[in-house]
Amino acid sequence: MQNFRYYFRKLSRSTAQCIKIGSTLILIYFFTASSPCHAQSLMHPNAQIMFVKSQISKKSEPVYTAYKQLIRLADSLLLTNHHAVEDFSVPGFYSDKEGQRAMAKKLHADAFAAYCTALAYTLNGEQKYAQKALYFMNAWATINKKYSQFDGPVVLSYAGAGLMIAAELLKNDPLWAENDLNHFKSWTISVYQKATHFLRERPNNIADWARFANLLSANFLDDPKELAFTISLIKGDLFEKIAADGHLIEEVKRGEKGLWYTYFSLAPLTASMWCIRQVTGENLFAATKDGKSIKKALDYLYYYNQHPTAWPWFKNPDVDIHDMTVGVWPSNLLEAMKDIYQTAEYDSYLSIYRPIIYKKNHFAWTFPTLMPVYLNQANNIE
Image 1 (cartoon, helix red, strand yellow):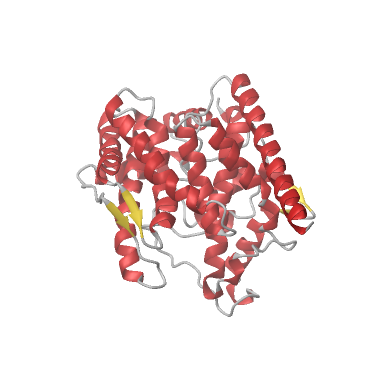
Image 2: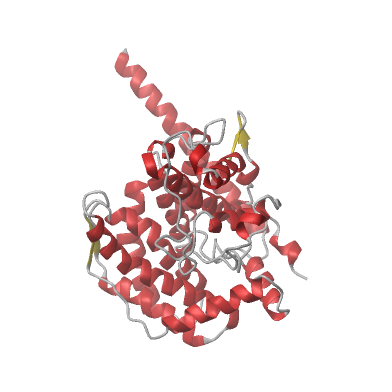
């Protein structure tokens, strides 16, 4: 009898999951069928790109200054070499911090370079930037065969997202030779998705990054079933992560790093919600359950980042140092969210950091001043 109950519960959960995936597939089909311009890039859909180009042409601030900042960075990367390795072997951070940082930097430096130059090309059409982005992507696709050690799949998820966003931007461009594009697709399946699948059902920020990465890769591969499954995972436990007061249940357990991990979970989670908006049209930013919401979680992070001594989970938690050369968290996240929620409450904090670029080691909200996000972006194009 106990075995029967166990298998019945298991079957019920499996059936419910299948129903969710099926309904999401239907949403994807009807949304893409009714949309005149399906998003080639989930992070940078066509309407956003058109809006930013219009702002650049009019030299409208703060986008124009952010664009000039992007081009300076892209120019500085044109002569840099790739760091691709056959085995992306990354030790666990808490067992070998220096070893972890050294290997992780190989990927996140190249991923940022690819993303930065691909975005520059997308906005101004200068082929030198596209060629450099393709150089980095092709290097990883041909040289990297696997990942290993504890943090191998973890870093692939959060740093590799930069490569995947660059790939989305360029996947239909004739400059990307078909053979090279196919190599990158094979790498995406055999290495990148292997890592994200391994992590995407964890309970904390590791899963948030894996799911975000999975959305990007599924869209790049034009795989609606993979998109639907990942979306069902994100929606399935969204409100299990957030407490009624807005704190993230798993992340505040991390001692002095509790504030950091709260940000490190919300960044990919909100980026995933933005991606889902492009895929199905759903607005998860407005979703609530039992008084819980993403906005409440963001406000919680914002308040305690401003008042870290009041953080109830650990005395004097870590906050970011003001290093404008690489970016300051959570300014990048809050810059992206201010237009989603149409609130000016973050502005006094954000104004000193603009134009904001975040290029440390993970890529969700990397260019938020340059690439603002609106729920109805097309309405902002003049």
